[in-house]
Amino acid sequence: LFNSSNLNNDLNLIKSFYISRGYNESSINVTSEYFSEDRINIIFDIYEGSPSRISEISFVGSNFFSSNFLRDKINSKSIRFYNIFSNSSNFDPQTFEFDKNILVNLYKKYGFLNVKIETQITEIRNNNFKLNFFIDEGKRYKISKVNYQLIDHNLFEIIEVEKLKFEKKLLKEDNFFNQVILDDYIQSLIDLLRDNNQLNYTKIKVFKLNKHGISWDCGGECTKIHKKPVMGYGANQNL
Image (cartoon, rainbow, N blue to C red; front, top):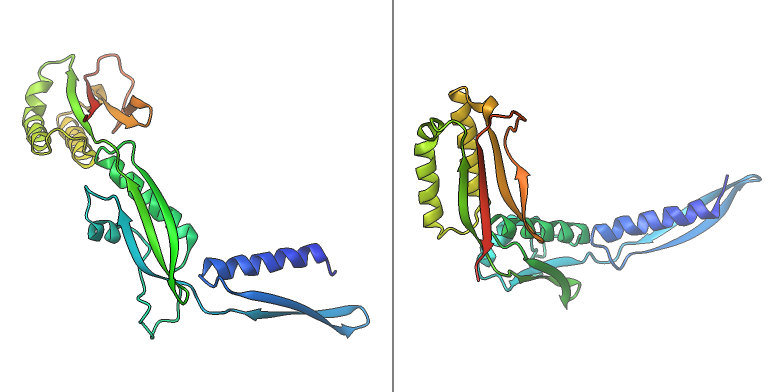
């Protein structure tokens, strides 16, 4: 049965689909014709228009990472306006938002806890747009201390080599928070303790950063056993 509400929903669905594909100038005209006494045909006349395209991508305020490095990390890719062989569109607001989250998480991995990123779209010419990422990196956090609370002090002998490697890597980074280094170290401890049949008596706790400060987060394979060595990371802000 014909339902005007369903028709409007279909129109919005089609329009949203075209916009999501970068056809921002698309329009839809609906007409009907009688097919029989109790039936009609619904005709959607669609004008696609020219696709909108991102021809430039810029990063404003990125001092820690190079623009080329950040450009490789995001999903949005530019299509030059003079590329006459491309009729496709890369204009997708959902992708822009997804890329922003990628960049925020990337900065946080390197200790920029309070990073703020906004996007802006500006038209250059003839449906060609520039995607701008405005980045406020904020201050970078450092690891202030690493605590090892081991019930069995013999475990120090087991982890000593990995511990020294970790400390050298931190020193090389000037003690700045680096999630990649921390994750690698945690995994090396888990593997080492497992190989020495100590993992069931081990709990690795990590100081992680959030926008409110420092909080505890359990990483790796954690078990609730009374006798357990504990390792914690503290972090402070680089002023």
